[in-house]
Image (cartoon, rainbow, N blue to C red; front, side):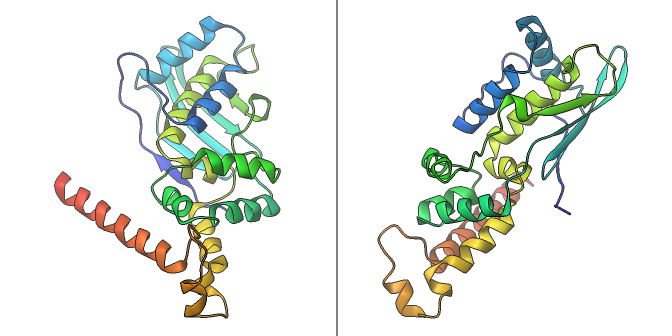
Length: 228
């Protein structure tokens, strides 16, 4: 069973929420494919910004959240296809091709060239609209109701902030990918230290990934102290 990620309820927001990342925009386009008209999309965006959607739960291939509106409390659940074991292995190879990609993964980023190389290997990181399956307890006549679209928008904002959440949803958990990276790095091979010294320019080594993790931990600790 995969690990479950939980995200707190989003606060009420005024105005449009801007999606910044390429993967967030791609996911947003997939959502827009599901709506039956622009009015439904507009209403769903307003509901997503209203602060009336509960905490979001994300695991491999699944997500869910509760929605509270004037008619009652509803539960939205959705599924997306997960990557196969071969797909995850191919993705880890792409990520392990350079230290910069490993660093990006650690801070929730996903460089576009990762997606391009993954696609060349037959791995699609962002699901299409037809791959997003959602249900809602409201019993709306349309296959995808406004509650479902609102939850999908909030999911999109969450994924936009952290690409590792997208990979988690697709069945490629961050820790699993980092573990694969460590196993495939030169420093973990039988060649020993010489392999690390002889790594090609730009190729990630175990020491480089460890350094990034240490630096990230320091940043998070400093941020925590500042917020106290």
